[in-house]
Each structure stands twice: as structure tokens, then as C-alpha cells.
Amino acid sequence: MNSAEPKTTILVVDDESTNVRALGNLLKDDYRIQVANSGERALAVAQGTVQSQPDLILLDIQMPGLDGYEVCRRLKENPATSAIAIIFVTALDAISDEERGLKLGAVDYITKPFSPAIVRARVNTHLQLKRKTDLLEQHAMLDGLTGIPNRRLFDEELDAGIRHSLREGQPLSVIMMDVDHFKPFNDHYGHGEGDHCLREVSAALINTAKRPADRVCRFGGEEFVALLPNTDAAGAGNLAEKMRACVEELAIRHAYSSAGPVVTISLGTATFDPADDENPSSLIQRADRALYEAKRAGRNRVRE
Ligand code: GH3
Ligand code: MG
Ligand code: MG
Ligand code: MG
Image (cartoon, rainbow, N blue to C red; front, side):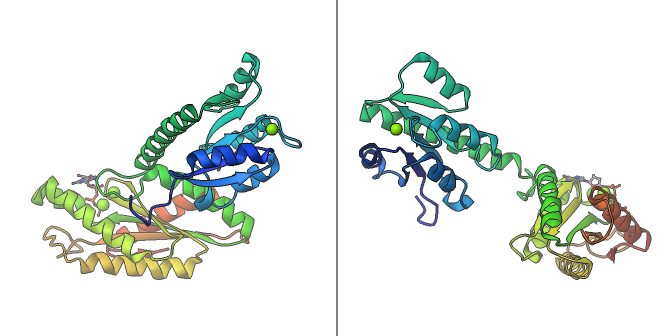
């Protein structure tokens, strides 16, 4: 395993310290173990930063205060924690208890006293499954040709970005981009070269947007979009100009473009500022209109 890769983490939740210790000892050689001795503490740990979020929780049911059922219900209803796998480990051995636990979204239900080998085996199985599900989800958000985030991820992050912007009173900008005269490029150099060009352009755009919160996505076809949290109109204009220049500097020959002789892009920027009385849902439309203006004004330029 790559040492930079975060170790798989299991959160053990039980009000009795002997149980916490027994489960912890059973798994500590293979996993990073977090512990919580109450439902409240378990929620605080699980809802902490994403980096420290457990992959799986071994959850006692009978605890003073918040019981395990309630902890499970709250984790499953919160999108930020709903993907964490939950296995109940409990003295409640009635079928009706198990039914209730599984209905709440737990992946498994183990009764005490437990067999160490069975706990280990079930934990391993569910963690393997979770790794595969996580991977599939990541791939569903990436564009197959360029490897950068796709439209689906963009739509999700745009919604989140607008909520963040309203909450924090911070501006949010987008840049819509479109490769100039790309149809003749394909027609003359072939689709293979066209695909290669899109990969180079996407890599150049990604390398230009340097802030960790910036997102560059393939919007579709030969269109790209950048989502820029906490960025005002001037900042978006600056970055757009850098992106325009970085694509031109790739110097990919394009003898059939009026903006040529190399591949270029046109860009349109738009900014949502919560201080203005504007509908955030028109953001993309406004960026699109600006892009259209950039095309009309001769391509290989930025408009807002
Ligand atoms: P404009 O400057 O006005 O944007 O002209 P354009 O030729 O770029 O515009 P148009 O929308 O007519 O053409 C887009 C072209 O992009 C058509 C299509 O063949 C090409 N294209 C879209 N997706 C892909 C892709 O995944 N690979 C390749 N090779 N070409 C693509
Ligand atoms: Mg208990
Ligand atoms: Mg287009
Ligand atoms: Mg185009």
C-alpha cells in the first residue's frame, strides 16, 4: 500500500470499555481504529472532517443517551455520512431488533457474544464492497476521454457552490469555454487527433486553475467549464485570460481556423454575488451568452 494513502478506518462504538477494547484488539493490526463510548461521541467523530471520517462503524445499540438505532438513522439521513458502512454489534438478539437495524440501513448485524473470526470476516467483506462502491462513484464523476471531472460532478458542485456562496456571502464565478472551429479540426486532422487535442487542452486548463477549490470540468463535446468559489468578476477575468493564453501556447497546429494558425478557445465569464439581487440559476446562461459574444467578436478571446 502507498504510504501516502489514508489507512482504512473503523470506528468502534460501545458504552462498555471492555467491548471497545475487545473489538479494537481484534482489528487494530489491519485497520486504523477510532473509538467512541457514546452515541453522541460517535456522531461527532463520524461527522468530523472528511479526511478523518471512518469507512465503517461497529455500532452498539444499547447505550445511555443516543442509542445505536438513532445514531444509525442520523448518519444515514445525512448525505455527508450516509456512505459509511454500519455493522451493529449488539446483545439484542431478537429477529425484530435485527430487522429494525437492517431497515435503518446497516449492512450487517452481529450479536454478542461474537465470534472474533466472524467479526473479522464480515468487516473485511463489507470494507471490500465499500472500496468498490467508492471507486465506481469516483469513476462516474470523471470524463472517460480526458480523465477530468465531468458534467455530473460539475452540476453537483455548482449547487454546493451556490449554497456556500449564499451562506458565506462570497462571490462565485464560472468560465464557459469552447474550442474554436473544432469541427474543421476534426474534419481535416481526423478524430484521433481531435481526441488528442481535447486531452491536451483539458490538461492545460487544469494546470492553470491553481486554487484548491477551483474545478475544471468537461461540460460536453469540446466545451469546458471552470467553477471558481470565492472569486469575483475581476478574478474570473484574470484566470480566463490565463486559460486562453495557455491553450494558445500549446501551439497545436490548426490551419483551418479563422482564429488560427493554432488551436484556440473562446471564453465567457459570469459571477454570482449574493449582495446583488440576482438569480443564481442564471449563472450558466450568462456565461453562455458571454461565450457567444466572444465567438461573435472573433474567437480566441474572453468576454463577460
Ligand atoms: P465554433 O468556433 O463556433 O465553436 O465552431 P466549432 O466547429 O468548434 O463548433 P461545432 O459545435 O460546430 O463543432 C464542435 C465539434 O466538436 C464537432 C465534433 O465533431 C467535435 N467534438 C465534440 N466532441 C468530441 C470528441 O469527444 N472528440 C472529438 N475528436 N471531437 C469532438
Ligand atoms: Mg451497550
Ligand atoms: Mg461547441
Ligand atoms: Mg467549438
